[in-house]
Amino acid sequence: MRRTARIVFLGGGVCGLAGGMMLARDGHEVTVLERDPAPVPASLDEAWATWDRDGVRQFRLAHYLAPAGRAVLEEELPEVLRDLVAAGAARMDLLALMPPNLAEAGPQAGDERFVTYTARRPVFEQVLAGAAANEPRLEVRRGTAAAGLTMRSLDGVAHVDGVRLDSGETLRGDLVVDAMGRRSQLPGWLADAGIGPLHEESEDSGFIYYGRYFRSPDGTTPRPFGPLLAPLGSFSVLTLPADNGTWAVTLVTSSGDRVLKRMRDPQLWTAVVEACPLHAHWLEGEPIGEFESMGGVLDRYRRPLADGRPLLTGIALLGDASACTNPSLGRGMSLGLLHAQALRAAVRSHLDDPLEFAEAWDAATEETLTPWYRETVEEDRDRLREIDALRNGLEPAAPSERPAVLRQALNAAAIHDPDLFRAYLDSRAVFKRLGQTFCEDGVAERTLELAGENPRLELPGPSREQLMALLG
Image: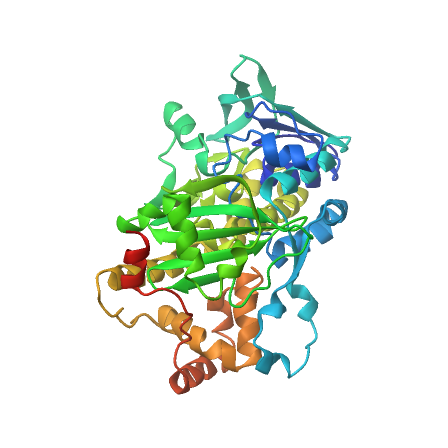
C-alpha cells in the first residue's frame, strides 16, 4: 500500500463520513464533498429541529443501527459509538424480544452481540459529523456539488482520476468513492462519457411509509410486545426506540393499496395505531416534528462490470450507491458501515494497482453487500404477495420456492426454540443471512418440523373490514 493516497468521497452522509474517517486514519488525504449546504448544527436539538438535509429523503423517518453496525463502530470508530451513547442513544438488546418461555433457558455465549444503540438520524449524523471534524487528514466540504468525473485511459480501460465540481474546479484523486446514496448521479455521468451501460437492476420496492416521532416526559420509551416490524394483515407496524426518550412509530403499506393511502392523514393514522393492541401504547407520548411519509422507494443494484471485467477503474460504489432496498428492515446504515469497513480493507491491500483494486472491490461487494440485497428483495416480494392477496379478500398462497418456504416456517418455529429465535435475530441484526443459517446442519429440518407442529404466529390487529371502517 502506498504511504498516502488522495481519496475523494462524493456524499457526506453516514457512509461518506464513516468511510472517510476510516481511510483518513490509515494515513490517506481524504476529501468528502457534500452537496447539501447546511452546516452541522451545534446541538442535538437544533439538528432535529432545523437541519436541512434535502439529499436524505428519510432524514426524519425511523432509523435503526443494527447490532452489526454497532459492531463496526466499536471496532473501527469506537469514539463515535462512545459519543453516540453520551448523546443519549437508547441501549437496545434484541434478546429482550424473546418470549419469556424461551428466555427461561438462560443466556448463551455470544448473546452480547445482540446489543445496539439507537438514535434519530439527525442525532446520529450530528455526532458522526462532529467526530469527522476532528479528523486531521479529513476535509468535509459542505455545499460543494460534483458535476462529473475526470478520466483518462489506463491500460485500455477508462480510469477515474478526479472530480469536476459545479464551480469549475477539478479535484484530483487516486480513488473516487461514490457515496451519493440512492440518488447517485454516476450512471448519467458514465453515459455522458460514452461508458457503459452500467449494469443495473431496479424495481419499485412497492411500499409506502407513514410515521412520526414521539417523546416521553420522563425519558423512558415504550416496552415492545412483539417484533420491531410487525406484519398485521395488509399493513405493518414498525416501532423503534431512539435517543433521549424518543421513539418512532411507522405504518408500512403497499403502494398499490389505494385505500390505505388515507393513512397520510395524521388523524386516521392515529386511529389505525390505536386499533393495534400490541402497539397503541406507543402513542402515549408527545408528538415531535412533522408527520412524515415516503413512497417511490426503489430496490436497486448496480455493478460496474462488462463481460466480467471492470467497466472503469479508480472508483468505488459504496453503500446505497451500489445496492439499496426497502428501508423497513432497517439494514441500510449497518450494511453501509460493513461496506465501508470492507473498503478500508480493499484500499489497504490493492489500491496501488487500479485494475486489481477494481476486481477486489467487486469481489468484496458481492460478498458483503449483494447477498443481503438479494435476500431482502425476496422477503419484500413475499410480503407484497401476501398483502395483495389479503386486500383482495383471498387467502395468501403457500410459497413454493424453498427459501420462501423456510422463511415462512421460521415465523412459526422461532418462538418455540431458543436457537431458532437467535437465528432469526441474527438476520435482523445483520450478522447472518437466513440463507446461510438454513445451510447449517439440521437447521432447515428443525425449522420445518416445528412449523409443522405449530401454527404461524398471528399478531392481533384490525381486520381488513375494520381497517376500511377506520379509514372511512
